[in-house]
Image 1 (cartoon, one colour):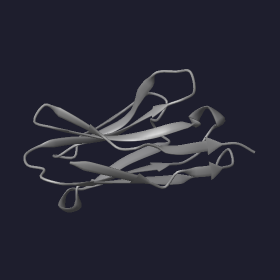
Image 2 (tube, rainbow, N blue to C red):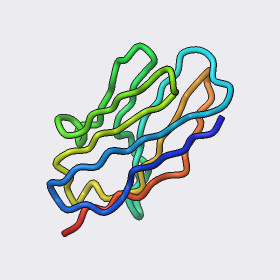
Image 3 (cartoon, rainbow, N blue to C red):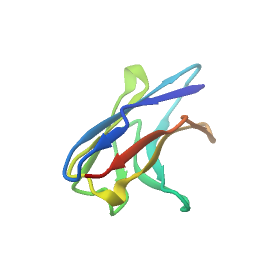
Image 4 (cartoon, rainbow, N blue to C red):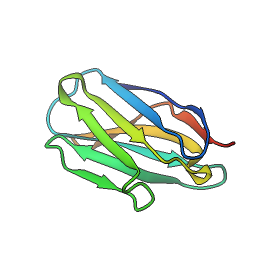
Length: 114
């Protein structure tokens, strides 16, 4: 299984970005896909997850600003980020969990700065 993330970049405070992550390989059964982020010198933290059935979970910092969605037919997960703040600056990683195994993407840099 491989994950390919895209969509990061530099954006001004208050702006928006959309991250995407496509999973490829032999994926069977229910899965959880999601996004985590890691700022310099900090641990990797949950941003948002979505399960096969569509139920979502958000970190408090992401609620009301970020929206996670997925295309099950393509094993793709998206993260729409609005009203971005400088403290959202981090490397964002996508993760796929299936049958007790976690797979990580390579990470995409998001920088929020004026």
